[in-house]
Length: 127
Image (tube, rainbow, N blue to C red; front, side, top):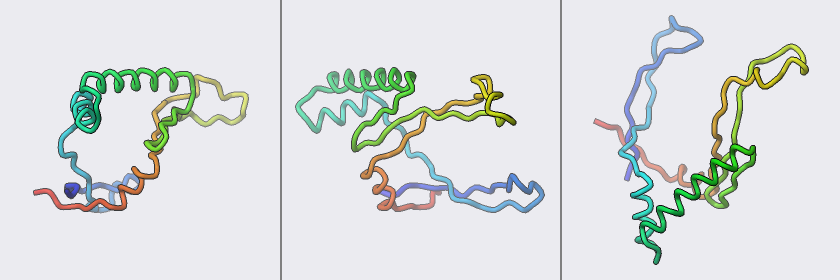
């Protein structure tokens, strides 16, 4: 199955007066929630969908707990999660404090199989 994309015009943020250029943007083709993942996993093993759901919820709970402690959460072949931050620049090291931190985000580094999946994708224009 191919990934759908649409073509969108975008301005150059460094030169607002420059003419727009057109770029491909991936289109999502639906979503899969925890219930569906639990159901799919249960079809592939001897565990029930409700057991899979409980494990997925527990995984989410524990990932949040570990990330909030500043730890990298390594999920083996799946990849790992880590908290990243953005801050204001200051003139000296002593001026940098927690008030300089403006944004935090979750970084995900995919494992080898997820990265290699990107090389095997095909694309088709929507519409």
